Length: 199
Image 1 (cartoon, rainbow, N blue to C red):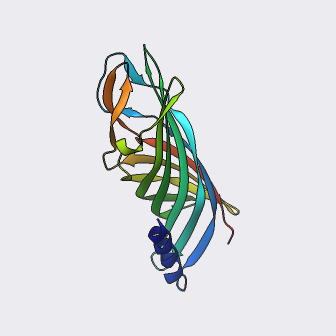
Image 2: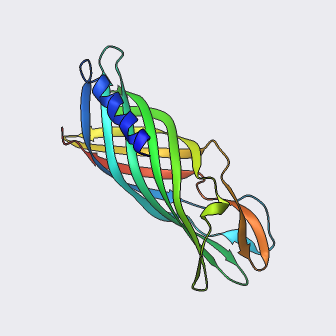
Image 3: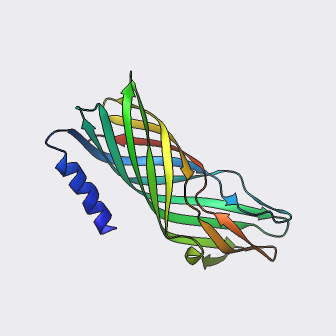
């Protein structure tokens, strides 16, 4: 993680002489739903639930090519529910997410897309008050993508993005009603973010 932060800092510094750099805090709201990777009788994922992210972003504008690069470092908290006729399972996940967006402007709007790296820091299941650590059931590092639109209002940076998964993120020890089955802890999700340019 330290190497990743250092690399992002070096990228911003190295292009600073020929580019315009912005930096500031960022918070986002996530709407996500747990994916069930196999069918189990009388078991289904619950409705989409909201999570949140907080962290920082940097935007490096490169006038020569008319594009910008916007890396973000975000701490994420999400929850999901699996329901069945016998019992419900509440799942919670904490991650460090690093989307790296590349975009340009079309009128007042920004259009951007890029890879989104995710590092799982903790995962727990709660069945009738019994909390279990399930982090080892999931990949610690995964890769996805984000694409969306944004707009800048004064010093505020507003983005609406869709996130999808590129790598598999299965777990094999989620048990509901006596059945164990695979899930995906970071499926497709909608991300609404707002940042503030400190400079």
